[in-house]
Length: 252
Image (cartoon, rainbow, N blue to C red; front, top):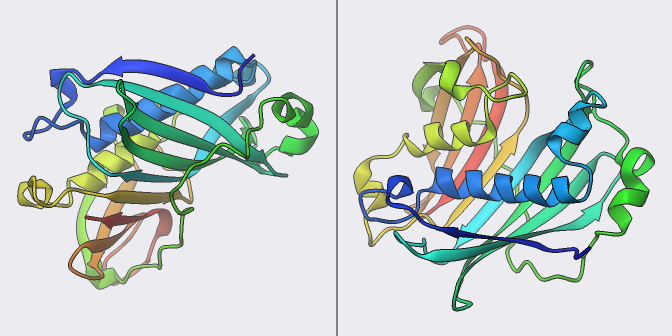
């Protein structure tokens, strides 16, 4: 079986924004679906793991886009596993047009956790032999790895949100891409104008959130085109600083 898996999709009108461009949350969902399709075909998809009381969790994601596809563009989304470590595995992606035009690339880091204890599994011990045959470290992914985002100050608070039904996924925690949606909504529609495209998004997932959790969103502008975002649960203004759940970096 090939080490790279490629999914062909068409950007439909219902997943584009006011500029008729593909939305970043839909891009994120497509990458995660591509990862799952790749894993299912090779015997370590989500349901395969759930049957053994394990599941995948996304730890870090970095997406860099030279341009966003537009409505009715046909895309080839490819994914492959770069490497495997004791607790984490690296998975990369490319997003290209049907004519080979490169729209962008993505890097991700995943952990496998015990469904009951929520503790990470020893990947090399459990799945090392399975993964080894599919590793492709030589396949280029020419974007920088994920960096680190600093904690934000309480004064950077923007809004609060209680996690609701539409936020929750099959693992009973807030879906990875729902955070992206909420983060994107921290900016005005003018920030997404044609002359100011979002170029890079980095996001680190630090803790789980569940239905009903109070999520507080913080935003800090670093320079004209760069912003840092932090999401905490159980933040009390003037009191408990809460627990960091997500940190992100956006570069326009």
